[in-house]
Length: 306
Length: 275
Image (cartoon, rainbow over all chains, first blue to last red; front, top):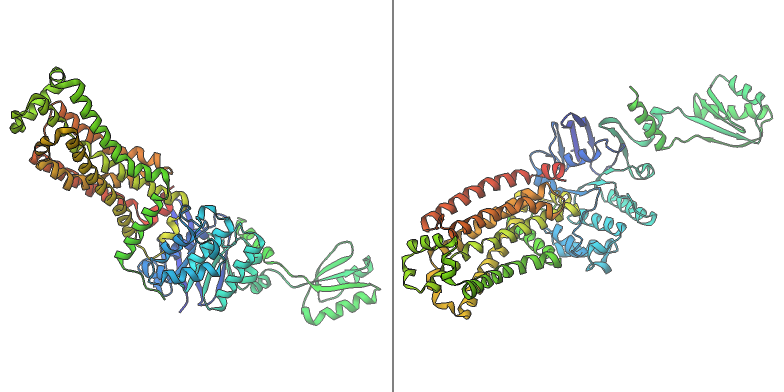
């Protein structure tokens, strides 16, 4: 059984279609990165999947439960980290966590102790949340999300606005959750973070543009290219490589060549030989790695074109 | 997997939090706890000043004369009292309705502080992702507002009776603590509290600060003031039957506003429409 499954999930607000025919599956224990520009409908999707708002059309299940029929049961099984942490500033960290924890059938006191310690907030537990920094509030929000040990987590921009150290702590936590077999639906703008944490990436802009592993997304969009850096580059070398039948497009700048190769692994040594034969002094040869940002920009650019 | 806590526990949890939040703020806690006593002191001062400086003879030549006459016809047992005492009973008889301002204003304050606080701190969305049902949340908030407003009204009424006894008007209590006052305390006060709370919820759904939310909700004060004025000028005297009729009307209005508030207090409305 998939942890999350949607079929033609759609949500409109008046004339605006925020989410259109979203069909996808998130497997148990998977970390899915949900990427898209601002206003793409990511938060609306999370709100539908967490049973806070209803879809206009289509259906979805979370932990095998229909989102329109089993809202309270779904809420027992999920943890939602909203984009804005949202705490009662005049209550202490402990009072805030206890309030939220007491809606679940857990030993709230014990769980609150555990998570205050785990997120380094034990010493500040009696301080009012209004005095906390943004990073501390975010850690507290993560503690709240995990208090009842949910199977499925919806994390909306969990590292937004955090300093590098706090952001790393959050990423480490997500890795821990993955190791523990929790399913994580991660909305993020941070592409490095998505690459680091996610098993698969969904690129979304009101509708699902692509859904695959980062590696498959790359290979579906970009051919494999090799970069050859030389001490100096002259036209005889460029001519020589252009005449090789396994070389596709060639781009050159001052001292380097970027080439598309057929049978990449097989033909790379022959390319190197051809350059050396033309007295090229090679400094390095490496495969050009397209970042997830390249993938994301290519996909969203395609989407924006008429 | 955890299983949700019972409805009772969830409602109690909401109530506990509401009280913690409201009483952790000096302004709101002072407003809620001191305002009822200010209203009571105001009532005592007015009574004292009227008795001390205006006197029945002076008041007979004002708009209050017809009110006094209507009062005497409705409650003939006070005819045996002196003119001064009759006026004192007449004024003290308005107090149960004047004290309706207490549940009205405290319940409105609770509702607006509570909901606007949630909006300002953006706590509603994470809250709506817990197993708490929206009706449990609304009921918890309502009870957190209604119980203190009821208890405060009853305490203030008790204090008022003690004070007028101390001022030497104890012999009049038997004429003023009548069936109407009991109906007002036991039936009308809870109904007015609920009415005020729901108006506060409705006002808060469209407002981002407590004052803005209270603008709509304070219309509850108008019928209360109207009752007092009508009685003072003799346009109406609330006997048991009219008072029960009034309670019926308030109950119907409560149901209508409760439905409106519940309609507004839905997950989807809160997340999408409340700003």
